[in-house]
Amino acid sequence: MITRPATRPQSLLRAFVKQTQPKHASPSFTLTPFQRRCKHGVPIWPNQARQELFARHGVPGFLSAETYQETYVQYSQHLADQLNELTLGTVDEDTGTHALHVKYAHRSDKAYLYNISAMLTFTRFFWEECLTETEDPAARKPGLLTMKSIEHTFGNVETLREEMLETADAMFGNGFVWLMKGESGQDLKILRTYNAGSPYPDAAPRRDDTDMATFGPGSSISDQLSGRSGLGFSGPEERDIAVGSSTAGSFGDFSPNRNRYHAGLLLMQPILCVNVWEHQWMRDYGLLGKRQYLTAWWDRIDWQKVENAHNLITTENLSSWQRKQPAYSAHRYESAMDIFPR
Image 1 (tube, helix red, strand yellow):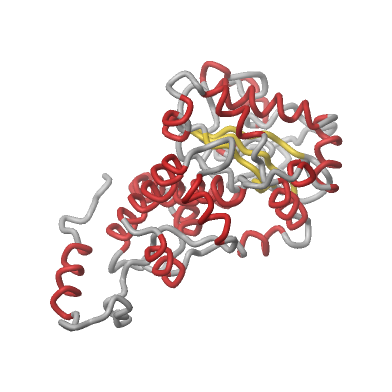
Image 2: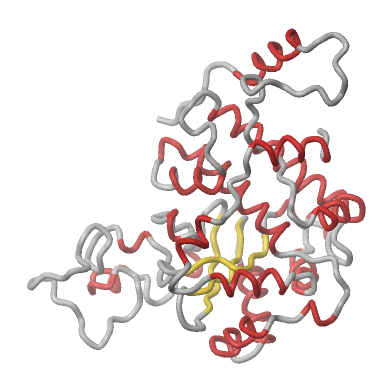
């Protein structure tokens, strides 16, 4: 059973802060560590100039300033308020959003907490890591290593563009479409996740990538019973469960948990995404403007950020790259609240 706090600790906290604040306090009055309890909020980006530009003018040629305020600032603040309320006074009070969505991806009784922390993580990723304001043609093309991977997997950039846009346009519902990079080699993969389904392998099993209307080969019941659990066709040497296997444990090839993972993505990380929740495009493009929105998104990809993420994901530093994901500390949130008042 999913439970939520019977009271609103934040409301009580605000009352306490109001009573204890000096009568002649200046706007820069600093709360004591005990009073400063709101851990989550709208984060400040390292590139503050870009964030301020989006706040004033939106993403040029793509999304308006009103959409930025509604779908990033206000939406993130709403999610953060809910997250603060759920975690205040618990062991998760100081835990970052990414870590929270990983921790509770397996817990059905914490589904609400998972969904909020996941959406905070993914919304930030889309706005901060994927979009650019620059008009420089050079900055709007994939970097050298990213281009090599694109050509290795898709043949050319135009094919990647077509496949990502068609995948996103075909999704009947809310979610995200991700471009995933493996820890070794040049392989890329397109992944769709519905609602708040996670693309991160450390949040598995959280396989929310299946649209039953497009449930294709490699995922049928017969394929799962073949010993591959929905992971596609077998290798040259099919393992024999009768004689045992080193990978037949809790998440081995023959385990019931194996097909809960995104097929083939256990060792991949996202380097790009497009948000296909309806609220993201409806203000600027209308109810039927999804395709126009997707086309405009492609022209505003920050390929430099994609290149940086691509370069970080290697066999040696995949785990360390994961640890570098923003924890969104209270210090960042407090300053962000000053820049983006409610």
